[in-house]
Amino acid sequence: MPGADDLQGCRVLVTRPVTQAAGLCERIEQAGGTALHLPALVIEAVDDPVARQRCRAAVDYDWLIFISRNAVEHAQTCLPLPLPASLKVAAIGQATATALEAAGIPVQLVAGGAGNSESLLTELGEADRTGQRFLILRGVNGRERLAEGLRGRGAQVDYADLYRRVRPRDAGTELGRLLDAGIDILTVTSGEALENLLAMAADADREITYLPLVVMSERLVSLARERGFTDTVIIATQTSDQGMVEAIRQWRETAVTE
Image 1 (cartoon, rainbow, N blue to C red):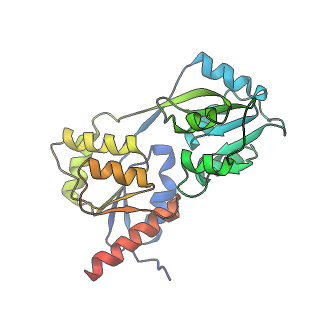
Image 2: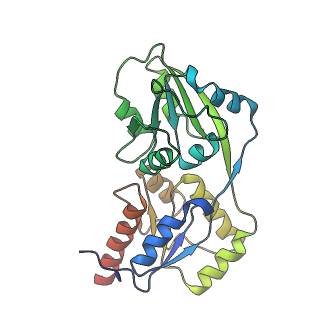
């Protein structure tokens, strides 16, 4: 049975954006650990007239697919809320679904498993989608896998690129300070965050690939290996804050017994 002091003395780097880190940090602290928040991503709104127009015309689509909580937040400024009951809504991951429900947008489908594009394609099934229109609400330069899969089933797919992810300025100095104070384990929830974290370490002329790393997907495990994390890369079995904390707990138990 997990206890309130399972992570006592464990210093965990949380790299999520400012508006998305509180839940994970709180759970780490509740488990007795110390959450060190250093965003590896800054979320900025995109002023894209095409994206706004597609959002305003949401009722012309059969499905809206929200890729992230950021997509939910930035879409609310242009979606014709409330949406009609005939318009189906899908979410990548439970966190995105929760954000949609909090915004008063009913969700018909949530990507389970790894909570990614592949999972959502599986949930949608192999049915012919000819004539159906999908709008994917996402960030700039998102993955193409979902759209490719839907188009392969006959669907018409449009994007609404609502935000961009950028690397924080001068974050390398703060990362160096935290490393000097001591970091026991890293957490990363996207490939872009991992790349930015490595760039921040390079800016500080520091090495971080020796540290244990917790991620949320097999894709991130592979990317971490490619980028030099050859020791301990742990995948959370649930794509949630609690899943991340459980993965840290399991690593801690293993590390203590070795």
